[in-house]
Every structure is written in C-alpha cells, then in structure tokens.
Length: 292
Image (cartoon, helix red, strand yellow):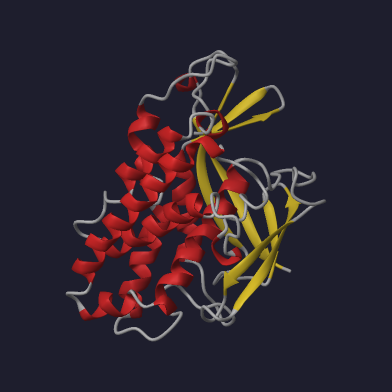
C-alpha cells in the first residue's frame, strides 16, 4: 500500500494499482527517438516480445495481492500500513517476491524472468559496495533502505531468485523467440525499463512528483532525473528530466512515449485517519505527460 498524507486526509493506492500505472506507461513507451519494448535489438517477433514486457511491468507487484486483501493496520492512523511501514520489517517483502515472481511463469516465463531481474537488483545493489549504476533503482540511490542485518537473508533470497530464473531459462530456450530474448541486448534494457517505470510510478503515487505545485521532496529543487534509461538499444542510455507543472501535469525532457499529451490513471482512496478505507469511494487520479 502506498500511503501519502495530503493535508488532513490520506491517499491510499495499492501496490498492484501502482504497477498497473507503470504498465500503462510501458504500453506507450517508444517513438521516433526511443525504442519500444521488444525492439531494442532484432527479434523474430518483436510485437509478441513487447506484449510480454508490458505484462511484466504491469504485473511486477502481483505478489502483494494477498497482503492488500487483509493488510495490517497502522497504530498511528488506523489505516493500512504504507510501504514505508512495511519496510520496517523488510524480510516480509521477500515473501511478496517469492509469491509474485513465479505467478505468471506457467504461461509467461519471460515476464517472470524480467520481474525476477527487478526483484534481484533491488537487493543485490543494496548489499554491493560498488553497485552497477545501470541497475540501481532511481529512488534507491544513496539510501540504505534495507538494514545490514538483512544481508544474510537477502543473499539467500537472491540465490532463490536465480534458481527460479534458471527454471524459466530452460523453458524459454525451447522456443526460438524466447531463446533470442534471453540475450543481454534484450534482457538488460527490459529489466532497466521495468526499474524506470516502477520508479516513475512510485514517484507519482507517493507524491514525490507533486500533483500540485511544489518541490520534489528530497530529490532536487523541482524535478527528478532518471538516469541510465535505455533509448535505442542497451548501449544507448540517456537521462530523463521529469518536472511537475502542477495539477497532475508532468513535462519530460527526452520524451519517451508515443503520444503527447499522454494521460494515465490510477485508482486511489482518499480517507480520514481512523476510519475504514471502505468508507471512501475510489477516485481515478490522472497524470498527463507532455513533451518539453
């Protein structure tokens, strides 16, 4: 649950809803300057590969479904715990990934492979003294999100992820399309794209990029820079400058989407503290991206 206090009220957005928002952006990624998913290098069927990557982005947080159905409540406000509160017990997050990574694998092993890459790098870069910049999550840079006491358990988790991915790889190699998609020229930009869109969606849903005029909390004066974003291919990576204009409008320098303006939506509940979230109706929050 992404929980943000705005004035006297609290906005609640579920983790799967945030992932769906990222999936909407993935479906529109690609234009004359940016390659679409599945098109970062040659593929026997780029359209099919694109659909698989969009699915991975949209479903990367499906391991939270069970948690969101019956979340623990916060003593502070009586509402479901937010992501920050959950991270106070980070080992529980590993269980979410263990559920989510293989959930699609029977029919979509490549989507599961990319979701596994996303989960892997969240922890691998945290406990690496010299993490690779190209796989460091944009909202994780310079922050010790996971305590050092978790390192041993996290490394066991990383081994579990690689074991699952090896099973996915064996199945993918049976099909010429998916065998090619395992090549780094495909897999790396797809994994980084998922990281990029996860970070952008989190920033929107958690009000790091303000829905009204204001400074981006803790990350620069009035904008966020997303680095190491794949453009035409893996060797061609650029930075995106993302700046709020107010009222949900977002301008992006080095615009990656196929439409401008592009409007995406996410359902949210707006509630008062110490009330049931079910007493509030869903609202549909809109964000609109624009070229500079």
